[in-house]
Image 1 (cartoon, helix red, strand yellow):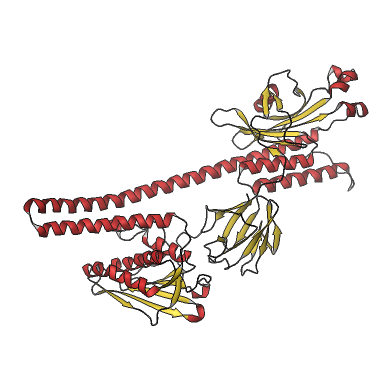
Image 2 (image 1 turned 90 degrees about the vertical axis):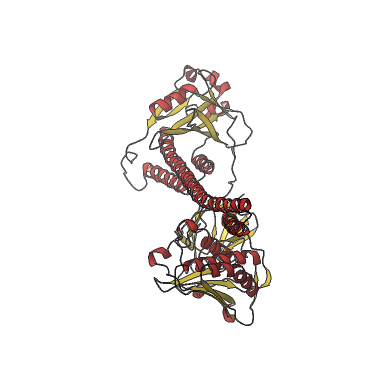
Length: 567
């Protein structure tokens, strides 16, 4: 199945399956593919199935659609194409219609004298510099025609390897290009297993059918190629005694083969092997005609080198992604362990007070201990809910509701916390309540996190105050929820990371999950969160929420957007 893999942008690392005949892409949540990119239009483009592949059509987007750095209105995609929409860059991959088959069990490494094309008649190493030699005598020179053809092949090979991140698709494409250029009957690629240093079949291709006999490759040939790092052209008849006594080869036929190393920057990563069989009848008509030449061998060596470089890059990219994942996992475990440890210490402290109160039958001490336990139970519950919300991609379960009712529940829940922090919590709803469609539970958590952050910002401020108000903009079909505090404000250098995960200015009391979770929830609703703040002047968070599910917040509704992890 065709798919898109995001390699740059806010959705980096996500994979989208193109599992429908027509699939739209854009910012709007109603698209089959939703991108959280402010430079992407609400309905930006469409993917239309065309056999195993797709056509991409731009839907008159504001910033255009680009394929391989060129702007397109409609484009037939090929596997490996790079698609840029807004600031998001994606790789398109699709199954190719080919005769490539699973190589496992269909390629054998055999000893000498088992019928493989084991007589080396030519060998070529990888050239240190470009050039094929020879002098151009005129524009009609056969040498020039061959050179132009070879240049075109190398260009297409370089293009293929630069656009493909999946090794199997890369090798499939390489074999397809080789079969377009040379009259090979069979071919395969064998890669070096890094653990055993043994060659293992990776991909095989047959010109006629996928069910032919196993390919037998001479161990002698492989050892020669790997030890000398040279490509070889072999034949089981040329320069053989039987060539003069034509009767024997008239009945047996001739098999020719080319085997070249895949030499990368750091070593040989595998080999490319192709062969062809000349039937007896053709030998009688053309007794000295060979399908493979030294020119084929030289170009195969160059193709093998290009493929090896691409494979090394793919291995490096995969290792880099794995290292980033492990680093992120390590940071997550360390951060969460620290927060959970602090919460458990609070629970232990509260439990100790309750235990002492029970011994002394002092209900005041028991009450104080229980208050500490209850507070820390709430903290760990909020931590778990924020972790689940942030880590999971979800579609909001939108229903018609009253946003004022949700805000009222948050205010009631946070009233005690604000009182304990000596912060005045004010709620000024607009009249009447705007009709809206949203996921009530998700929006409750988003607003709760922002209000909690505002109360915490006022804890060390005299006459701390947090104000919540709503404003409806009918012509924009947008409801704004403003949460303002008179705290210390946010310094300019902190704005860029305030919505980044695990970034907190609260020390051990903060998890760094609250605001990122709120931003994620609001964006899943097609809205956004903006920030207006300065040192010593307090902070106002504005949650802009579309009033209907088919709308999204437009760019002119945004104030200065803070994107801590934007590429």
